[in-house]
Length: 479
Ligand code: SF4
Image 1 (cartoon, rainbow, N blue to C red):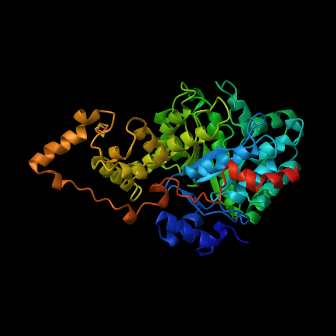
Image 2 (spheres, rainbow, N blue to C red):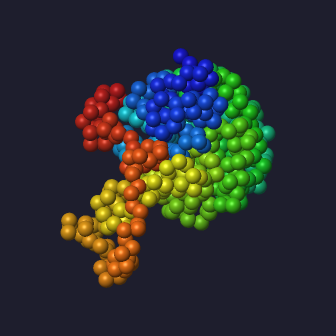
């Protein structure tokens, strides 16, 4: 069966491209051309039946990925399903299962079965769990893991094929060394075996597996900087050059590609990073991890990174990998997923507004009009996180009688500036001149840029309580 890229090159608009065009409010032929040119990807494994197709590319609304998954020490199968539900509910456009703990296959199959968004993985993590020592990983083991995950329906995989043995000396003297999990594992493997990265030497075999199942490459940045001090160094850009070459190899095999980027980058270097990736990788979609613009705020890195992600989105990054408040500190729980998602939906939307994506600002205008109208219920409904907006308002002014009030508890009735302003304009007869008629139903913005932010139907993504009813017995029987 051809990949989306091969169909696009043949001039075929697939049902997935039709659906994407509908969601993005774009012409299907434009979608096809973007995919054919490698400027956008539609991650869609042939086996992922529950998927609602989406697109990642700089000409489309900026997307957000949420990382979920367990670790050796924390999280259960039930919690993982709840994280998936939470991530999709709060607007994740894709999820990556980064599990490294127990029950990897069951968790992955469960996620793919229920996820309406593409599911990504990092197969080197599973390979590590299958050996006692990283050095014992073999190319055949890596290919086995990749093939099995492709057969399970994984839509995209992070493959750190650009970390080469000759790049490793370039990381000497770094402040934070190699911070990518995949990058550090492969560096250890190369040093202990005295051999080249097997993901690089076997890249064309991986391409053939990906082509068969239509898995999209997410070419990993295993040498990304883990601190401002290491940003933009020779190691980072040597790997990027290799990723550019691998992008063209994958395209030759008819496989879709996006490319991952840093990491920790000072604010003033973010645009340069995006433009350099776009040039080196011939416009393949850039998927950035943050970037964090300062290193000083553990506990708040959803904020430090959302600032960088906004600038990256404005400069042309196509997808943002969210960061939660637990970054650098621990495995996120469901509440951290919610906070990280909110920070990144803000970054993606703010980037789209600043970049002038058609209709992106309509949402802002509609909410501002509701705010000035003191239409509290509409303001809550339009909010990026309606539940939180309503909850915060009602903490101090509970009850229906306050939902028409011309003030909130921040300034109080007497000092509400909007009420004072309106009364003054009323007296002057100026209120009629205020234009407040943004019609979101007529907005040219993509679905992902209109409220409610949780655009995906989560009815097929059970929360943990339902999970216990539906699946626990099955999984127990498998143990
Ligand atoms: S009281 Fe202050 S914060 Fe509240 S609606 Fe009025 S101007 Fe806005």
